[in-house]
Length: 309
Image (cartoon, one colour):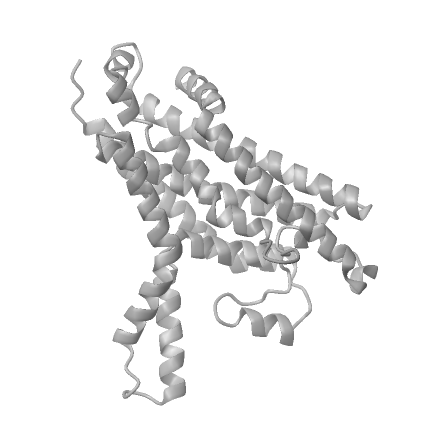
């Protein structure tokens, strides 16, 4: 597996599509961080440096500029899909899959090496981008992050890497299910669109069908609809990731879901790091479970697949 790992990592770093996509996302993320520093400096409340470096990743700049966390949530999965959509069918189409497995390389070593190489490349890209953002903050603001902020950013890195691994596993699975790389890429993009954007429309429609306004009082019915919408939306890895990172990067968040905005205003005292981790632990475990199950299905499918030598 080590030989496959290093070979795949070298191929990923040398892939033009990965480099182009990484540069685009890096430029957008760094620009979002820079505009966030300008917005933070413009605030009169900068007399206190509480959680400033966490706000670098959540604050939106002036105009239509979005936060760094937004780019990792909505466009980061494109990196994972770019690495995995032709992981298997690309080898099959080039005729190299049979030749690789004819060597003393086991099947599980091949697919495990591809997956772990992809995760490693994504982790290097993510930590490099986060260090650039932190460097911009230190240079612009004139001071460094606290220990609590560093710890929360490290947990943000772990959550983001797990989120990327989910989409990498989905792309590898589709590369096994479809013979053509174009079809697997389109299927991965379609899944990303459904679970990132369309799930919110679906949740509203399904909740309206489940909960009837005539059954309960209007206030109770609205509450039940909101609960069902949240349950359906939590099928999406993007929604789970958004909940987890919002609580990790904002210590004032005490509850997840519909009560986030109210809780940040009524109870402004920040949570301790351990309490924030306990709050987002179910979301992180669910993301890890999704990545494990999806990759497990791909693993079993690849082990049982007929490959003609």
